[in-house]
Image 1: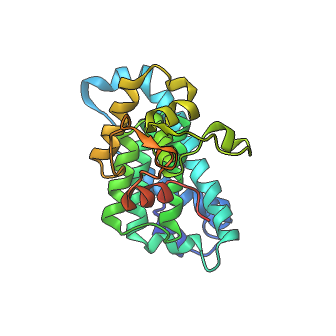
Image 2: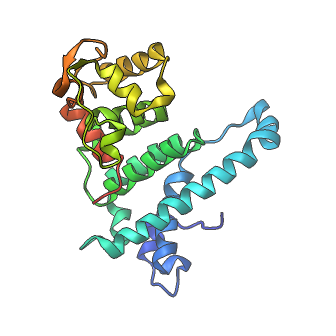
Length: 242
C-alpha cells in the first residue's frame, strides 16, 4: 500500500497534491489509516506468517478496506451534511474503525464482516451509541458467532416461517420459545444444547432478557420479543444506517 500520508495530512492537502482527492480514494485513505494501526507479528514467527498467513491477511485487509471505503462513499451521497473529510478529525470514529478492522482481519465469516462494517458506518454518521458502548459492541461482534447474531435478530422480532412468507402466523395454544426458534431455523432442530448455550451467552452479555427457552407459554408468549434495550441498540449498530 503506497501512501505515506496520514489521514489528516492527506486530507488537508489540495486535491491536486493528494491522489486521494476523489471521493472513493479519500474513503480508502481513511480506512487505510485505521488498518495501518494494526500491529503485525515479528520475531521467530515471521517466516511462518510470511509463508502461510500473511497472503491471506493481505487479501482480507484489502477486501475489508475497499468494502468500507465504498460504503463510506455511498453514505456521502446519501446522508445530508456527511463529508468523509471530516472523519479525519473524528477520534471516536477512528477508534471504532481501528477496533473493527482488527476484528475483521480475524474473521472470514461474511455475516460478522457485514456487522463490523455497518458498525463503522454508523459511527461515521454519528448514528451509534456513546464511544464506550461502541467499542463494547465491536468487541461483542468479534467474540460472538454468526449464529449468535442470527438468533439475537430472531428474538428481536420472533416470527414463524409462515409469517415470513406472508401467510398468517401459525397459532399455538401452548408452546415454547425453543419450538418457535426451531420452526424458524430448521437447521437447529435437535440441537437444543447448542442454541441454549448461545442464548446463555446473549443473556450474559445483556442482550437477551431471558435465556429460558423451554418454559411453556401461550401463543402470544411464544413469539414475544426477548431482546433488551441494550440488545436493540446493538442490533441497530450492526445494521446498515437508515
